[in-house]
Image 1 (tube, each protein chain N blue to C red):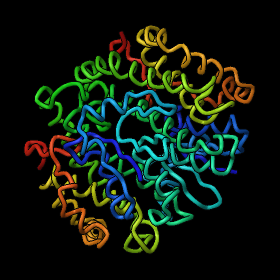
Image 2: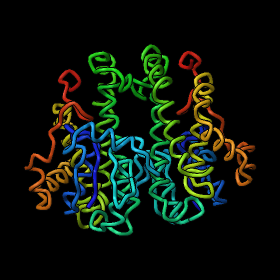
Image 3: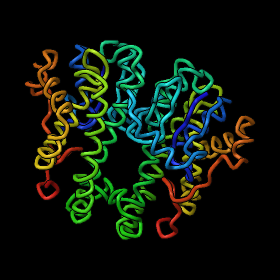
Length: 230
Length: 230
């Protein structure tokens, strides 16, 4: 049994871990979601040998593992169904690239930093959004399209890996935040769209995706401000 | 023999890989630095099974490995002297946190995105720099100080790992870019400063650090604009 600690109320970076746990059938407690933000803060700041800079972090057999990509790597080392043996570095590379895209999607609405509200940086967000919409979203998605051109239906081998689940979530997040732009960009990325749909249809995820354990997008990494889309 | 490909003329993200190679005594070619940007562009865009989203990437026995933290993980799997067995996830977690700090140091001078010059976003950079100086630099360095409180002189065990080399470079970059602020913050982070000095004194790095293979900071990730320091 694993304890996952992440901010309640948003999918956030925790969602990449949740999708892997759920699709892998790995039992876990979603502690931040179930116990609330005060419990998270108390647990996070508790002295421990290997502290976490920020949520999400996982507690496994008394050991704390942080950084989203690192949590997934740790899980795949214990649960080989999460990534094919021999391709762990490729899957990790793809995961880090998904997280880079996710970080940029966040920075669009907070270009001046996380310490200010969006409402305090709207003109700057509009300027940053233009480059993200026109240059960065296509560059990231065409990269994954190119990666898929050398593989089959999945990013690494004959079955899904956690990088596929994460790319699904990235597409979900970008569609939520930038629906107009994504409708255009996805025309050039049919393999990415097909991968998204294949993950959405996975029997392993059917219960989770329909459940209220899956938290809807809100004011987290991916946000829908119509004035930033186009 | 490894081929490292990275933008010539700056330390950049390639430097984290170089320091590990140099301290580990691992032979490599620094292809981007030696052959120039056109050779890099040609090699990068060449069709390959596992494409790289961006430099740095490593070519090892015909396999391409990208994403800085992933390259270091890959190297440590082959060269155990780069990270102690049994603590690979901890070292990877620290590395990812160093890279998060590095990414934020870049975003300070490019808050509206990499497609515009600094000169086109100076007021926005000044606003973002305030938060980075006052909140983010202390938060990151105090995190590493806290991590060191549970270890000895090094971040993971009895000898240096690649995370130590990377933290050294982060401190170097922050001192270059924000000398006034760093002089203040380091007063509260004596273990981080001591680790920096211990890496600077490593016999394994003496030749490299004094050589012109080590490229000076310039217009890369870490930039010194006096108006952003303070």
